[in-house]
Structure formats: C-alpha cells, structure tokens
Amino acid sequence: MVRSWGVSAQRLVPPMQGTALVGWAGPLLVALFGGILRFIRLGEPNAVVFDETFYAKDAYSLLRYGVERTMLGDAKDPIADRRLMAGNLDIFKHCPQPDDCASFVAHPPLGKWMIGVGEWLFGMNPFGWRFVAALVGTLSILIMARVARRMTRSTLLGCLGGLLLSLDGLHLVLSRTALLDIFLMFWVLAAFACLVTDRDWARQRLADWYERSPVSELGPRLGFRPWRLAAGFCLGAACAVKWSGIFFLIAFAIMSLLWDMGARRALGLRGPYRGTFSYDLPGAFAAMAIVPAVTFVTSWTGWFATSGGWGRNWDQATSSGPVFFVIDSVRSWLKYQVEVLGYHSNLHEYHPYMSEPWSWPLLIRPVSFYYPANVPPSACGASECSQAVHGVGTPALWYAALLALIGLVAWYVATRDWRAGATLLGFAAGWLPWFYYAIADNRTMYLFYMIPVVPFMVLALVLVAGLVLGRQNAPAARRAVGAAAVGAFALIVLINFWWLYPVLTAETITHGEWWARMLMSSWVTSAPK
Image (cartoon, rainbow, N blue to C red; front, side):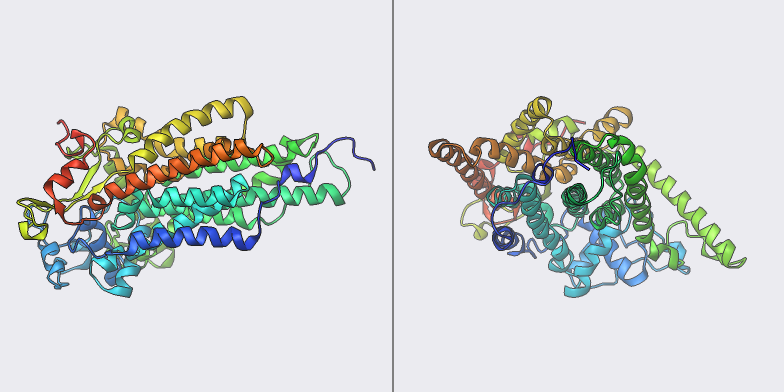
C-alpha cells in the first residue's frame, strides 16, 4: 500500500553529531573536572555543618537500627554533635523500649540511606557522611552533559551544559554537604534524562514501524519501554528523598504522554490521540504511577521491618496474626504520612536565612551553612580571619539563566520547540509550587530549595547558546562570532565561580576578602522577622 501521509524518520529522530566515543569522552572529562572540585578537601570543614546535624545522624541511626532514633541534646545543647566530632558514637538517647526513642522525621528515608552508604564505607566523620553527596553531584554533571547532548545533538553543547553545572556555587555546596536536596536534584535530573532517552527510543520504534509495517490509523503498540520504567523508578526515588518530588512526577508524566501524542501526530497518523490513549497510556500509568509508588513504599522497609519507628505500634500490629499485621502496619504508616503532611503545612518558624520563592532566582537571600565565630588571626596572617560555606549560586550563571528562561518562553510560543517546553516545564515544576506554600501557608523556606531546577536553568543556557552558535551550515564568520560569545560567557562564569570558591568551601581568608565576596548586604544580615 502506498503511503500518502507521513514524514521522514530523520525528522522523528534527528541524527546525533560525532561518534559515540567522543559523545562519552567529552562528558566524562567534564564530570572528572567537576568531581575534583567536589571531592578535594571534602572533609573540611571538620564540623557538623548546618542541617547535617539532622541528616548525618539520622543516616547513622538507619544503619544501626533501621529507623531514625532520638539523639542526645537539642538545638541549644547539641550533645550528640559534640560527641560525634570527638569520635564518641554514643549519641542516642537510652530508652527502656525501642519505640520510646522513636524520632519523628519530616522527610522520607531514601536520602538518609544514601548518606549512610558513605558512613558505612568511610566511617562516621565529615568525609564519610558527605561522600555520596559528592558522588551524586559529580554523576549529575555527567548526566547533565549527556542529556544536553541528546537534546541539542551536539557534544560541544552537551559538554557546555556539564561545565556550567559544575561551576554553579549552590550545586557545589550541596554536593559537599550531607543535606537531602542534592539527592532530590539527582533523581529528578536522572528521571528527565531517562524520559528524553525514551522519547528518542519511542520515535525510533515508530519510524521503524512506518518503514516496515502496514498502514493503520492508530499506529503500533510500542511494547516494553525500559527508559520510561527507569524514569518512574527515579521519580519514585525523588519522592522518597523529599515529598516535593511529587511535583516533578506529575509534570513529567504529563510531558511524556504529550511527547507520545506529538510523535504519533508527526508520523502522520490519522488517530494520534486515540493511539496514545489506547496504546501508550496503560504503560505510562504503570511506569509513572505504579513504579514510583512501589519505589516510595519500598524506601520505608526499615520502618516496616522493625519495631522502633515513629508511630509503628509494633505490639499492636503483631498481636493478631499476619493479616492484621499487614493491615495495622499500613494504617500506622498512612497515619504517619498524614502527620508529616501536617508538619510541612504548619512550618512557620522564623529562621534568619529564610526567604521567599520570588527572590530565589535573584539570589537575594542565600543561606550561611557555616561561619565559625573564632578563627585565629594566625590562620590567615591578618587581624581578622573568616571561614565560610555560603549556599549561593554563581551569580553570572543564575542571572544569565533568568534571561535565557525568558527567551525560551518567547521561543516556545513562536516555534513550539519541544526542548524549550520541556526545560520550562522542569523549571516551573520545581519553582512555582513553592508560591502556593508562601501564600497559603506562609511556610519557612530557603534558597537551596531551588537546587532541583538548577539543571533546567543550565539547559536554558545551553539551548540559547545553540541559537547563538547558529546552525552547522551557517557562514563561518557567523559561527565564529557565536562561538566567541558563548566562550566569553563560559569564561565569565568560570571567573565568577573562582572568585566565590573560597566562601563556598570554607577556605581560610581574611575578613576583608570574605566581605568583598558578599554581593549584597542581604547575603550577610538577618532576614526581617
């Protein structure tokens, strides 16, 4: 039968530039560069930094007991922190019954289990509890380079994406600190990369069918889609680190289905939407709903399998046989999740570095992770010395990304380019929901909640850089001017990052040098109550 409709396979799946070897070698070299920045002096500062006081100790509790237990001391008298830094691991309260020491925790356990891997490998010390954060931070640079390459079909632009992510100050700080947000960012970016790969995979299957099979209005069933299943697992893992992963899960599930519709429509099928709902939706539901749910629940295995978790009610659950055990365990677990939701909806406590989401892209109110009161003058050869870990993005990168995102809105409106749409959706999914909590709940929030969207800010810069470079068949002079502009921008980001580096990594510098790196007075003064 002669096809009177349809398009070429190359339009469905544009060819990748360069060889596979170069496509891996470049991103690996960029990731190596970023890894060196993240692992060098990883054990410094030799202290419990900011919210490491919660997550490093909770991770150790998971390793020992399978659940989080209550620690000695409190915020005013951190007995456990002092003992920890002295090498004394007797940091837990001693209780007659395990559930008497159960600790209420506001976040799911997967991120803490990941921190615990480093503690298991290298010990309960700053290097140990920061190791996996540095590892996933480095891996995220590799993923960034690869997904940017796939989206632009350019190894050069892919490496630019990885380089820019490696030079972001907030990404560096969170890669060197045992907080949960770097793990959330990692799983979100990994899920996005899997879905972009699935998009190519599905389109290639459609192109192969178009060339070899009889015509039908709906098109083929695409069968088992491993990359979408992998994306579902990653999104479930993101939710198992922090509940805010659910925003990305919803957005990416819709995006994946829209891509399926677009692929069937681009092929010229007469029933692309019916084909998507008939053939793609059931598999998408399994991959983007069932798989994430199973992954999320599985992360709570320690809570289900032990008696010491918050609200576990072990004695009650084991009193009437295995069926009641399952029913009562699920009931107790769901009650716990409702308590966590209530906690997040009523988190209004003042913090000197709290900020509003509208201010985050402008870097108005970063978070001081570490600034010891007394650094001896001999440490820097001046009358006053400073050590700081300042949780702030690289301003040159962030401000340029803000302009790039605005440009992508115009580009998407004009062309409906899927890359612009996907990048804007990823940014919106990680930023806009916080406005609801700011308005409806007046919730306590911080700048580092932006870290999951930093990869999408970088992608916006990469896509705009591709426009500046021009097409491959553009005149040589046009390409040269574009390359010079992109190279100059990358150099500016590098210099800006190098300038900030001492206050991102607790290098000992003079107080004057520290003050010179504070871009705004709001970087150092207390937030208004």
